Image (cartoon, rainbow, N blue to C red; front, side, top):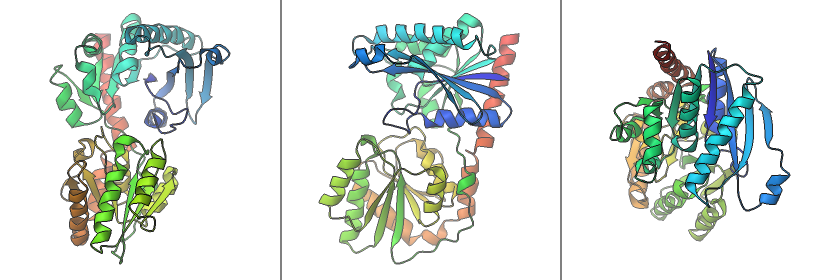
Length: 382
């Protein structure tokens, strides 16, 4: 089977985590017997059109077992959304024709995120009679279905197999269309599996893993740590990640006088994260909204219980035997949840937690994805 992956996001520029999932997904497809490449339309900011004129417009990245074909265009969305989308569709069609000069016609096109990649891929699939699967990842995806975008989302619904990364997203989608699959984010859990027997020390070790953006609300987590510190509960908070809000979160940490209780560890690769998790007692997710929450699965694969805000995605896999759900943007409730988890720490079975994580392993997700591909190919052949 030959698959072409078309993502809306790809890791480049300042945010190296944006779209990293799509690379891991394409690599996993190839690892499990699917021949897959990626085609990415890189939308360059309009603020420096002169620079764009002299920029190389086509690049090919050679990954471990596949290629990424990158075609650059100017992002015209600040001028007009309709103009930008029309330009994106045209650019993708042109890029696809160029891609076919050295590659076979794909059996499946798998686009990630409804706009623009999903919409443009649906048009491409209809033109070339290729089945299209679209997976939505964007946490604020429902805005795609309002009056401004409705025509585009309806086109995607009618000309693709639509899917989301979680059941909570699927429930929302089913308000607008009558069919939706779930293709959860896959996680490479193998580096995280360990046989560590975790015991409580005098200091409870808590960790967060996220890009340091506004919606991750690390400031709320820091306020919860402050509450615990003020009532003499010893907690050390490690923060793994970097991003645009890093300096702000460090300022909050300093203002709350938490520098001895908090360590900003910066960005780490998955093997470094796996080693850090061996020394932690629990994972904290403080986000306002998450479509899924990959760090939660990684922590569970390591046997860690989780404290998470009710930010939708993680609720998919966190039950009372895995961890505790607290209110969004409520440092007091978060602090109380941390205390509750500490007091009941010995009740959490690491083997059970690891078993739940396995449902989101690369093997399971790719196996189910291939079933969806085969079903769509058979439908097209009839």
